[in-house]
Structures are given as C-alpha cells and as structure tokens.
Length: 170
Image (cartoon, rainbow, N blue to C red; front, side, top):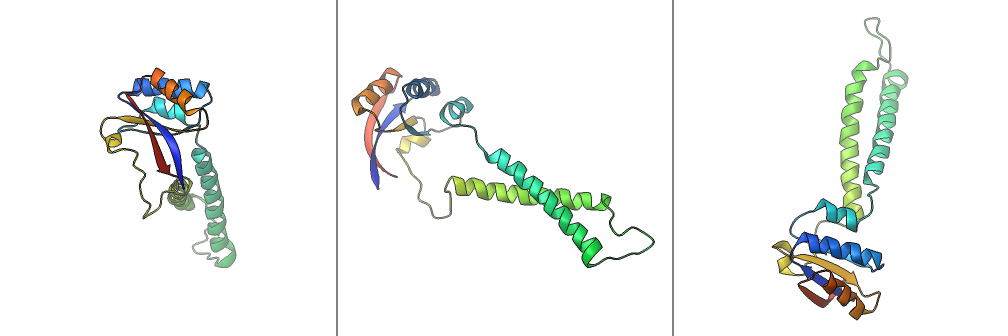
C-alpha cells in the first residue's frame, strides 16, 4: 500500500532538531527520520523511551529463577548424589552457571525482541527514501495528516533545503 508523504531535506542536524521540536509542538505526525549518522539529541526528540531495558530485566529475573530451579531439581530431587559427606545442594558452585546462563538467555531473547519489534528479518527489503540519505543529508518524513501546504510551510520555516512529496510503500 503506497501512501503519500512529505519529506523535508536538511543539510545539518541543528535545523532538523529545530524542525522536529517545532512540528511536535504543532502535533504533526512525524513518521521517521533518516540520516548518515546517529545523534542522541535527535533520538530523544523524535522517539519515546524504549521498554526494551525493562524487558531485559524481566528476562534476566526469569532466567535466574528458572536456572536455580532447574539446578536444584537436578541435583536434589531427580538425581541426588552424596559423595564425600558433602550436602546435596551446594549453592556457591552454581552461581557461575546461573550467571552465565542469565547472560546468554537475556542477550539472545533481548536481541530477538528488538528484531521482532522493529520488524527486521532476513530478506526484508530496505526502505530507501533517497540515495543521499546515507551520504550527507538528513530526511524528515511526515504523514499528510494536516493540510499539506501548512506542513510544507512549517518545514520550510525550520530551515529545510528542499521539500519533496513522494509515495512510499508502507
């Protein structure tokens, strides 16, 4: 499905940041920002806080509980071995196993959650707004939820070099 978008082309990050703040105040629907480099100020202005760190903590807690339960079950309930007068369940040697399992499972599931949330999978065709987006230009892509002429005026007032109307696959 093709939808018509308004694209503002900026030559530097400062003008783009000014445009994003201005358009957010006007409640315009900013779809995406493309550029050659990452700028943390742009990310903070454009996006909301990610829930991925909270998901990682929940996965880590679940992995710790699961690993502890599995180790306890295998060493005490399912296959208890008493050798040399040592207790059936000795916690200190299992700390290393629990720690390493937590890192492995949390890292893997967090990466899979990130890729799933952003719909990044093998074979997906990249969306390329313009070949210059990876060289030296910044692109602000907007939906036409307002009057298109008004959006163009807001983008031009923010310092855009050029304004393009283009149909993009959604």
